[in-house]
Length: 377
Image 1 (cartoon, rainbow, N blue to C red):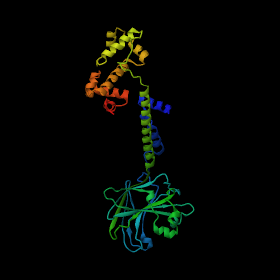
Image 2: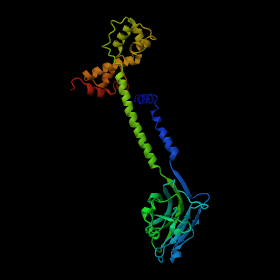
Image 3: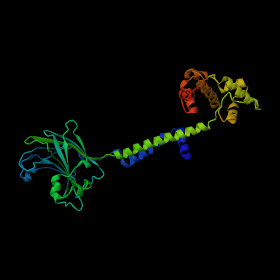
């Protein structure tokens, strides 16, 4: 504990105590970064297969256009029509590159900038490969993850956490596997993603979809929360330790009352004259070592060393000790305003008086008067 207190006092004196929290902050930034992002579209070269699909292969009548791909957008238009048991249309982005799956396990959300007309919702699908369950050439064994999203015409940027994706009931029935057995989404081996019509898409009305960005990212809220808690704990511990150190310093403080100085029997006449002179002139705001030297008849260069040797205080500390001692008496025994009292004991700067008093007593003059006023009981 003593070592910690000494460290806190040292940091406080050097005014570098605030630098310590920088260390964990830098570590968090180095390990996690402010954010992680992987852009699927747009990018200079697109290594992914992009195509549109519909229910036509299942006897449906939905009409869909080929995808229009530019440097800044993917777009397609479809008109949902009745015919198939579950009419559908969408855009597919194959995410395998040279036979390798896209690993998104380092990320935790999908980001879509999507604008759509004549519909109130759309669905996002992810298809993944599960070792020991999936077969690459059998689409039904691919894990299907789905998220229905309501269209927001004001803010068309959608952030969908991977944890929000669910397994469609029709896929669970088709594969005869339970939700509990399949477990959480397997995003370490992504095969493809699809943007498809939603449940609120009307029939027989052309719907245009424009996608301006597809990306994945990682939120580090947990790391930042740990950092915030660490900083709060650090601040509390620092405050407690500094208060303990300050209290111990007050206990060791040399308290000198000018009334109680007994130097009559001191053989050092110079010291006697110095003490007497300070006792008579401490209330002078302009009282200096030079004035003391002239009145006491002692060399100004000798006085600091004499005070240091006798009281272990320099001239300023010795003068403040006497002034604060008298201020304490006046606070206890009189009703004088604190401003008047400060001028009386030799301070012509009230903020300076307040700071000095608090350094000596660990509380403000007002608090001291309230606690120590004569007659309080």
